[in-house]
Length: 135
Image 1 (tube, rainbow, N blue to C red):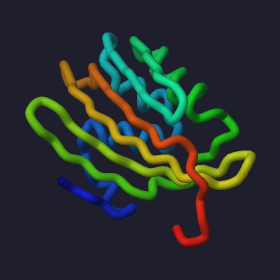
Image 2 (cartoon, rainbow, N blue to C red; image 1 turned 90 degrees about the vertical axis):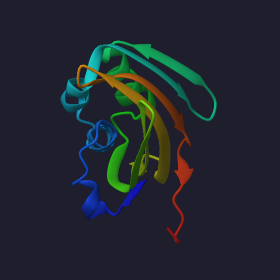
Image 3 (cartoon, rainbow, N blue to C red; image 1 turned 90 degrees about the horizontal axis):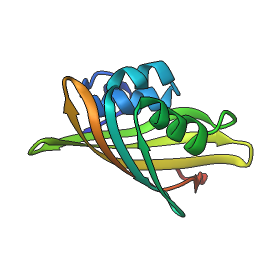
Image 4 (cartoon, one colour; image 1 turned 45 degrees about the horizontal axis):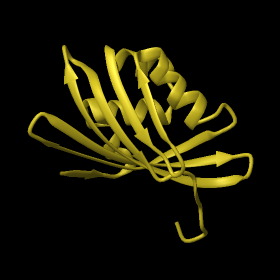
């Protein structure tokens, strides 16, 4: 398992790390380039289960439903990657400035790849958690 500082996070080149960096940048084209045309995504947030199939639906889920235009992802605070069998696990934490104030969001992702593209993802999200003065 690799746990990385902010400066090291830019050096890791796994599909999951590239996905986390693309999401942190809200880079829809970069994320789309990582996704297989037959991508299957399921996610769990604090109050809802989500499903998306196909790159466009996944981009909508991530950058319209989960992170809105008004949500500014200020930093990728934490990134860790690991692999087992045919899966990669990536965990990351964002610091987000929202209209209601700053929050932290942490996600754990399991993924597989086919033809060099992510074809299957399962995401568990903490939801927007209060950003305290001791973080």
